[in-house]
Image (cartoon, rainbow over all chains, first blue to last red; front, side):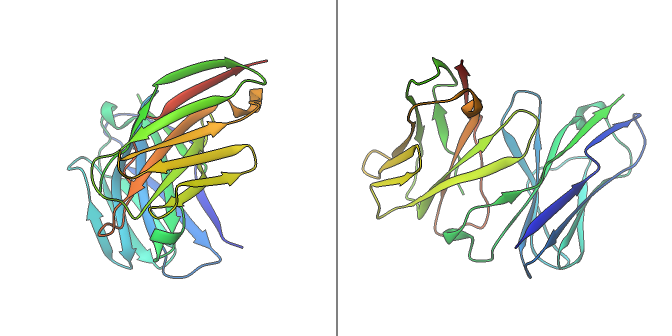
Length: 114
Length: 111
């Protein structure tokens, strides 16, 4: 069966520090991968998505970047965190034929920038 | 891609009652998906209804779709305290490969 791993679960980082969040998927190949961010009590904002290795689409210009170095690995990074980067970060994957299946989400990373 | 708009924003009911939440969208869809998010957790896929379907059931969940009105509803029957969560709809268009989520409906079920 397919599983998605996201870590760390919580993170407290000072302003100006770098960030690296990792997401890996097991049990499938060539998945679509997504990074979402959710501010407290708000909806989800799509940040990046990838349909293949090295293929990254950015939805919102910001202080973050994403990379997909391997088929089932998706990384969210920042060189210098801002206070506004605080939030709940969720990784998700879907089959390439997403139209017929739903997304599977990771358990999320709660990032607090102080 | 398009974003669904859930209504109401918040809903409070007693255990055993039914909960109905609605979703509206703007352009033609291929399917529409509903997700649940418990506090501090990731989203969980509940049900997918295709554009040529009008109603779908899964356990205590009933989803309807009215493409003429561009709307869908999610009914949770005999609600339980464990149903307390936020619920999101995600309409999926034919020419997109990403889901856009709205702000959801926050459901509170009191024991």
